[in-house]
Length: 269
Image (tube, rainbow, N blue to C red; front, top):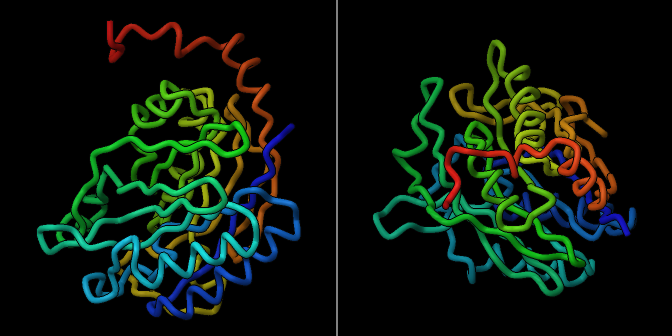
């Protein structure tokens, strides 16, 4: 059976408690649509442009505990971006994946030191590839700037994943939407994997004034098939995208376009 997933494109603010209320509302909408997984953007806990150190919490802290309760009450799995304390005084940009039978987290490996923004000043990088299983479907976790590094998505595929989820808070600017659309489709195609790319909505489309120097989102979340085609897409504003992931399609595409089997570089002997 296909796995029904929901992509929640929203605009979060600087207050984690207020953002929890948004997650609660959208989780309920996803459950009512029959989704088994709802994916929220990067920085769902608090938007970029916020001082991250004071709001960061461990994975057993109050914010993550509330997200776990949301997932339990709705009977589905939630993936949401948050910030956890790092040992060196910075924070980690963390995805929490939690719900019935699922409890894991991923720390963003590739930090956004680009386009004049230096995420590494306040954020420490992760180092581990993370996947989890839901209803027999293996799912890989990635965050925003990770999309520029195809080896991570191939690592998901090598670990048995047929779906990668990519929460993001994409930076605005000339050509950035085009890059987002190109990169997300490319990562699905060169790993022959479903890709659920879930961005923060454009703050302007939500009537919110954002910090202009921070990557606060452009919207255009999408569900992309393993052949690189866009199956569903949102516009700039807030919205909930619900779609079905057919795992058999991954098998069929990999049989036709055997890019994983045909690799000669970066493959362990």
